[in-house]
Length: 251
Image 1 (tube, rainbow, N blue to C red):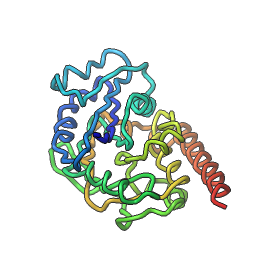
Image 2 (image 1 turned 135 degrees about the vertical axis):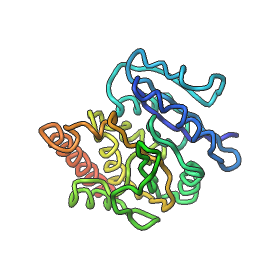
Image 3 (image 1 turned 60 degrees about the vertical axis):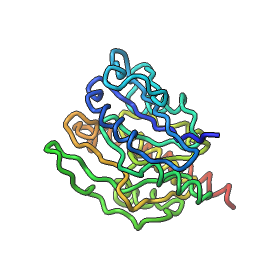
Image 4 (image 1 turned 120 degrees about the vertical axis):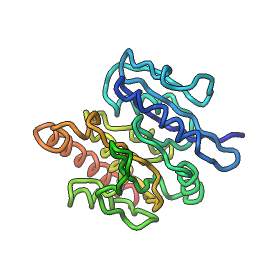
């Protein structure tokens, strides 16, 4: 029986120009025996027409639309349509590296107490060159439960890149998917996962992260101002509440 890893991708109209490259990176994945991937592309709003930017006839590609709610709501809607035992996020403008999905599967298959994985990232610049992600990566291997929140509370940024998350389905369902925020919903999910289960950091690069002016992280409100303060406050409150609940369950 085929096992499925679901890749979920939100896309808006401006992001469709990058879908073909994301698809190519998926097609280049070599998976373990008895495994396959499905790609749940979620159009964020009307008029996106993602199908026009992708080859037709691949049954692994599943496209649907939902009302405009932002990328984190769209990711959660894609998760709702997915069927895989593991769920991997991939933004429309990013690309997986060779072997990324196989490494996710390998960790989650062999480490039953690990709930989620992340990996190294390189930035893809406008001129086609790449550079290492600006954050300092942890040592490869297990990330003890609570360590991501401790790092975030000290530095106000995640130590690992939430755009590389691969999660066990029941754990993602327990959290209800991504936090429904205008931005940083993936950071909220990362810290929620960290409150409930150990993670794993893969030392090999798993994602090519495109840097461009149209992405959410380029918006002026992303890193400062009242909206940023509210997002950060809720993310921390959410993670701390989950950690407190989890600690009681582990007593």
